[in-house]
Image (tube, rainbow, N blue to C red; front, side):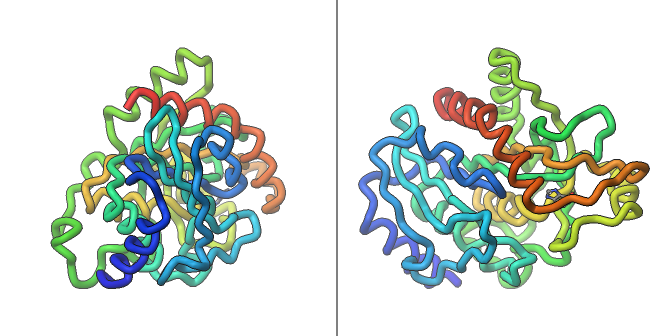
Length: 271
Ligand code: HPA
């Protein structure tokens, strides 16, 4: 595993001009997010990077983008790796550990998620205050690499209180609706049944999706400061549940792109 991370990092380092400080992960339907904001960019396709998994989802591009936003060196994952694609948790962790090796200090994550909160609406954004790991594995299972972090990493605040405070201030200033809540990470690929949505609400989730949790666990283990925002792409009221297609999810995510760009952009400016 360590050799794979070193191989991928060295390959990337030979192609970029500046070490990235901020990592950004773009979720379903959000592949164009930030792309126009990045200056002096270098694009590297996942399929040429040693040991990088491949994305199998059409709504996810498979590229790393390097460049600058507000003169801060950033690294953007256009398309991420999901558990439901058949990736192991170690494969999902690999790009995050590569980020760490390249020098990333902050990780900004976006995702598409189902909305479980009756007071909120699809198309709105939710800042992650916390998460529930409902996936059947953990990226840190197995031998611990002390090089990255401790055996039993603290998870008392996986999403940075400081970054969240800044994001809430930016949202207020820019008049963007930004809810705050708990994200449940599930394995997928099926969307939930009515009984499952009811269960998720009962155990305290406000939103549900199939990503983010493994990446944030890996990043926190490695001491990277994290924040994440969900685009609420579908309302999951068990009493009036309607069928949902990927198309609906992608469209809803795209419609919120502008607000998400503003939040991440201003956050990077303030770091
Ligand atoms: N469930 C799980 N993942 C999702 C959903 C959902 O309702 N919407 C977008 N991603």
